[in-house]
Image (cartoon, rainbow, N blue to C red; front, side):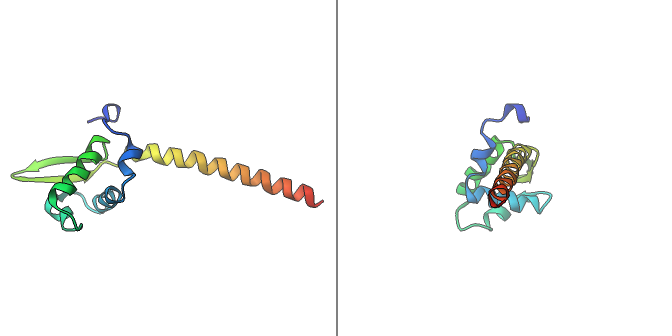
Length: 109
């Protein structure tokens, strides 16, 4: 699935703490099979699979079959959208804090 064909918003996909944890686990490995991912959570295989499906729909996770096993890996490219959004607001707040600081310094004089 390409970035242009994403079925789910990346922000929506990372809104859940379980999905953020899945992303973190996958970031630390080249690939992980479903049973290894499931072992990291206190929930069943079906619940983990549902979270992985949401991440796949957002383009954040890729999968491939190896025999009867499905292996998952992170595709971090869609996270760039979040990085860009955060960078914009980081600059916004830095600029506004600088303005506020200048205003307070002017008032002190």
